Length: 196
Image (cartoon, rainbow, N blue to C red; front, side, top):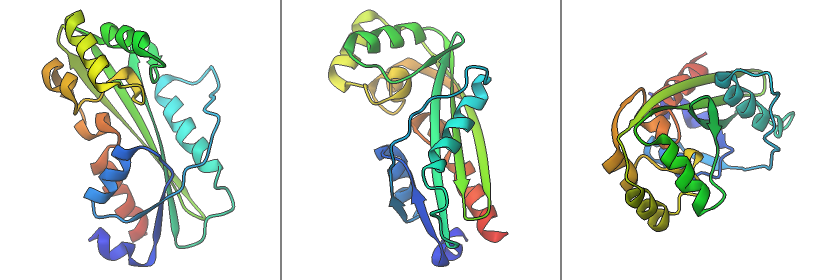
């Protein structure tokens, strides 16, 4: 069991996301939170599924040469893709409405990469979830943005909030990936790393 393997290790989570922190708590994996500023710039030539790999590894670079033998650092990055465009976090009300309107009635992808870094190794996992929104009225979109203020969320929405409950018809892939982390893959990868 993973909890037994964790006894001699310290997991460092480099994420300020309350959702990601809650996942580790729910998995009964104690983590130390250590968030460092990183300029999230990536080379233009990268294919979309490689951008999150690059950024999650870049976040790990901030800890370079500091990790001790018993520590595993976890960094991650999520991007929402719609019609070939990467959707970041909306900067204001108008942008949130524009982003959600662009998702209405269509399928988009949520891509997350998780980078596991130890003193002598690094492993990156990548998960894509396809999300299908029903047609949303402008009133529904305005209501959501006004009442839930999704300005800290890639793609301008949270699947676990009102808009997800009334607007998402189906998903293909991990629900938890859309919330913030592909938990099954994270648990499995940590177990593999600690067993090796």
